[in-house]
Length: 87
Image (cartoon, rainbow, N blue to C red; front, top):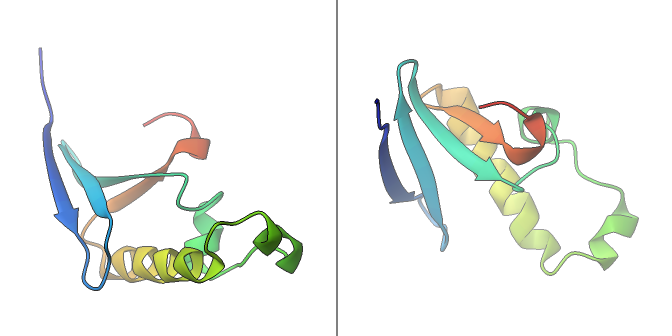
């Protein structure tokens, strides 16, 4: 049985820890609910302003998307969102 390596990291200027898993294809970030779609961080597609009413911290959401975008552009890890289905 193969057990992937897992590593917890804090991205620069971020308070939250991030879960990275080493896979056969390289590192994968388990981003959970950080975005609804990969287009959110790839193209900085923000939700409708109405959604800000139910967000605890809309500024933190934008900061998270920016951090995901930087990680995506750097190519150091694959980002997996919980809404995308299979890992």
